[in-house]
Length: 498
Image 1 (cartoon, helix red, strand yellow):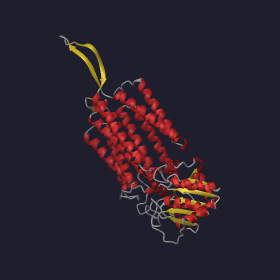
Image 2: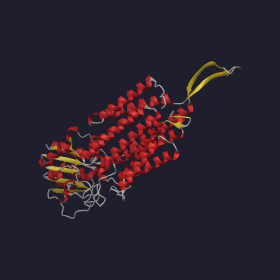
Image 3: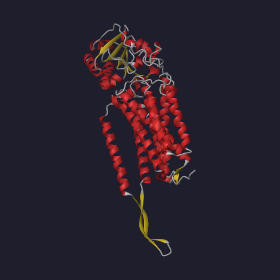
């Protein structure tokens, strides 16, 4: 065991303040009404952490005049002091500036529809950073103060091994999640033969090698851990289908936090430990809550869809149903909603793609002006990341008191005149209740089918939801299909209401 260097009390205080800001940021982000304040507190906390780390970790140079006497005694003439290594601080500030420019450019240009894949991409960068820090610490442990005569302390080997493993899993898993969310890969589960044995064997090998790494720091052990971790991240995510992708995004967020925390121990940085632990634990809790909302097993999802049926259950219910259906127009929809006492709007990913949230709020405002009660129903996994629909509606300044979660509004559909579904398929699909072969079976849904009239807005009858399952609601007697771009259709409804 090595003795930790004493921590400057002011540094500890600064990191403590940063940690408190992060905790308050998470608290603020739990509600739309306080989310802006939460973001600001998070930014303040990160600013404090970065400045404190720069001040305490920038290399210093000793400056002064030193003379050696006849007896070998060393005497200093004039003041001996430390100054900042200008080259090092320039490199650090240049890297920060480059990252800031990239971040600002992405933030200004990214569309809300691309936010899920952006989050997945950011998670991959956190994982890759953890791997690179771990590799640097392994290749030059003396610079990190974790070795004596080249022998890395056993506790540091544990931190390093786990940090690199979790970081590599986060990176490769996030890359696959990005590819699925971005359409570069199919959203359907990719089930490899014998994947359960392969996954368990690989995970067991990684854990065994991490344990062996504490006894022997041979290069082949470290690099084998790294390679196997990259591989298992890939294997864990490809069997997970589109219906479970919001949970995957949340889960990878948790992994990135734990990777950062592990590297915080390696670097001896308490701010990284605090931040990583907060992100890791909050991401894990959110993943568990979302699994409960979807009636999914938390362990099966984080194990790469462990419970999926290799015999074809992942694609069950994907065939398109050939039945009669009714087509409506914007004028029909405007008339039905203007005559209703209550309209419940159900937004989904199709609304996000069309960027229809602003005109949708305009439509709701016109209906309310005519005495119609308007509410919004949000499914926990609507869209492709947690809270996707809530963010879009908040962007359009939809009043928070009109937005309801599934458990709070589901019972109202049977007493509702019109359910207006705009681009939401899987979260309204009765197959989740009736078809045991469906990949969404067991997931709670919004019971739009029980409304007196269902107005279902989608581009065409040819497409199915992200889970690849056709929706029986399309063919019900009380359903009218509004086939068009979501934004264009709502704009035409607004004109008809005028």
